[in-house]
Image (cartoon, rainbow, N blue to C red; front, side, top):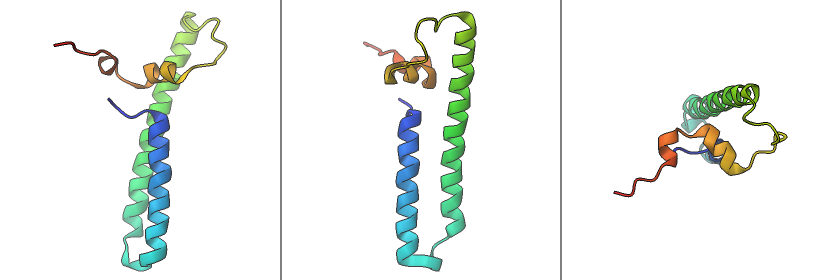
Length: 93
Protein backbone atom coordinates (compact mmCIF):
# COMPACT_ATOMS: atom_id res chain seq x y z
CA UNK A 1 0.00 0.00 0.00
CA UNK A 2 1.20 3.52 -0.73
CA UNK A 3 2.31 5.70 2.15
CA UNK A 4 -0.15 8.25 3.47
CA UNK A 5 0.56 11.96 3.44
CA UNK A 6 1.18 11.80 7.17
CA UNK A 7 3.74 9.02 6.67
CA UNK A 8 5.44 10.95 3.87
CA UNK A 9 5.61 14.06 6.05
CA UNK A 10 7.26 12.04 8.82
CA UNK A 11 9.68 10.58 6.28
CA UNK A 12 10.61 14.12 5.20
CA UNK A 13 11.19 15.17 8.82
CA UNK A 14 13.39 12.11 9.35
CA UNK A 15 15.31 12.78 6.11
CA UNK A 16 15.94 16.40 7.03
CA UNK A 17 17.09 15.40 10.53
CA UNK A 18 19.41 12.77 9.09
CA UNK A 19 20.80 15.18 6.50
CA UNK A 20 21.47 17.87 9.11
CA UNK A 21 23.24 15.38 11.38
CA UNK A 22 25.35 14.07 8.50
CA UNK A 23 26.24 17.61 7.44
CA UNK A 24 27.34 18.50 10.98
CA UNK A 25 29.64 15.47 11.05
CA UNK A 26 30.99 15.38 7.48
CA UNK A 27 30.35 18.91 6.25
CA UNK A 28 31.62 19.77 2.79
CA UNK A 29 32.63 16.17 2.12
CA UNK A 30 28.96 15.53 1.37
CA UNK A 31 26.93 16.63 -1.60
CA UNK A 32 24.57 19.16 -0.08
CA UNK A 33 22.88 19.63 -3.42
CA UNK A 34 21.96 15.96 -3.59
CA UNK A 35 20.54 16.08 -0.06
CA UNK A 36 18.40 19.08 -0.93
CA UNK A 37 17.23 17.47 -4.17
CA UNK A 38 15.98 14.40 -2.26
CA UNK A 39 14.20 16.60 0.27
CA UNK A 40 12.65 18.71 -2.50
CA UNK A 41 11.50 15.60 -4.41
CA UNK A 42 9.79 14.24 -1.31
CA UNK A 43 8.20 17.63 -0.58
CA UNK A 44 6.92 17.77 -4.18
CA UNK A 45 5.38 14.31 -3.77
CA UNK A 46 3.63 15.41 -0.57
CA UNK A 47 2.36 18.61 -2.21
CA UNK A 48 1.03 16.69 -5.22
CA UNK A 49 -0.79 14.19 -2.98
CA UNK A 50 -2.35 17.07 -1.03
CA UNK A 51 -3.49 18.78 -4.24
CA UNK A 52 -5.11 15.56 -5.44
CA UNK A 53 -6.77 14.99 -2.06
CA UNK A 54 -8.08 18.57 -1.94
CA UNK A 55 -9.42 18.27 -5.49
CA UNK A 56 -11.31 15.10 -4.57
CA UNK A 57 -12.65 16.66 -1.37
CA UNK A 58 -13.88 19.68 -3.33
CA UNK A 59 -15.69 17.45 -5.85
CA UNK A 60 -17.21 15.39 -3.05
CA UNK A 61 -18.33 18.53 -1.20
CA UNK A 62 -19.93 19.90 -4.36
CA UNK A 63 -21.80 16.63 -4.90
CA UNK A 64 -23.09 16.58 -1.31
CA UNK A 65 -21.32 13.36 -0.37
CA UNK A 66 -19.68 15.05 2.61
CA UNK A 67 -22.80 16.71 4.00
CA UNK A 68 -23.00 16.33 7.75
CA UNK A 69 -19.33 15.51 8.25
CA UNK A 70 -18.43 19.12 9.15
CA UNK A 71 -14.92 18.71 7.75
CA UNK A 72 -13.88 16.28 10.49
CA UNK A 73 -12.23 13.38 8.70
CA UNK A 74 -10.72 10.40 10.48
CA UNK A 75 -7.41 8.92 9.34
CA UNK A 76 -9.33 6.19 7.51
CA UNK A 77 -11.37 8.78 5.59
CA UNK A 78 -8.20 10.62 4.59
CA UNK A 79 -6.64 7.35 3.40
CA UNK A 80 -9.65 6.86 1.14
CA UNK A 81 -8.80 10.18 -0.49
CA UNK A 82 -5.07 9.44 -0.73
CA UNK A 83 -4.79 5.82 -1.84
CA UNK A 84 -5.81 4.24 -5.10
CA UNK A 85 -9.00 2.17 -4.66
CA UNK A 86 -7.21 -1.06 -5.56
CA UNK A 87 -5.05 -0.73 -2.45
CA UNK A 88 -8.16 -0.78 -0.26
CA UNK A 89 -9.47 -4.10 -1.59
CA UNK A 90 -8.00 -7.27 -0.12
CA UNK A 91 -7.75 -10.19 -2.47
CA UNK A 92 -8.83 -13.48 -0.83
CA UNK A 93 -7.25 -15.77 -3.44
